[in-house]
Length: 204
Image (cartoon, rainbow, N blue to C red; front, side, top):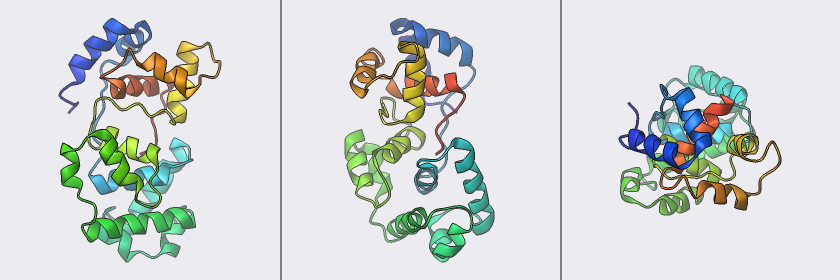
C-alpha cells in the first residue's frame, strides 16, 4: 500500500514541476512501499553503502540464506567470519553486529521515532557506528515513509537531476537544493520518481 499522502503529492508535483509531471505520468502505476521493519531496513542500507544495486541485492540474498530471517538475534548469533563469507566487508559485518546489539539491548527506541522530527531521527541514527546520513535518510524514506526527505548525497538522485535539469552537466548540492524548493513538502516523492527515471532505486 502506498503512503496516505501519495495522491496529494503527485497532484502538487505535477502542478509545480513539468519534469516531474512527465515522469509521474510514465510511472504512475508504481508507488513507494515500506521495505521491512526498522532493523531490516537499516541492515539493508548498511549493506548497500558504496555498492551497486545488483551487488547489494546479491549480498542481501546470500545473507538471508545463511542466517535465515534477518533480525537482531540471528545477526548476533552469527560471527564476523560467517557474515564476511556472504560478501560483507569486515567493517560492515561489525556494523551489523553492533546494530543488532543495540536493538537487542533496547538502546534504540524505534517506536518513539514515529513522533520525532526527521533531523532528530537522523541525529540518533548517525550516532550508531556504520550509520551515516545517507543510511539514515534511506531509513526515513523506506521505513518511516517520511514525505519530505531530500538525500543530497545519493548518487542516483544526483545522476537523475543532471540528466533532467542540466543536460548531463554536474549539479552542486546547492543547485539541487534550489531545484528541489519547488518540490517541498514532497521531496521524498520527487526523489522516488527521479530514481524511477533511471530504473535504479537505491539499495536498501
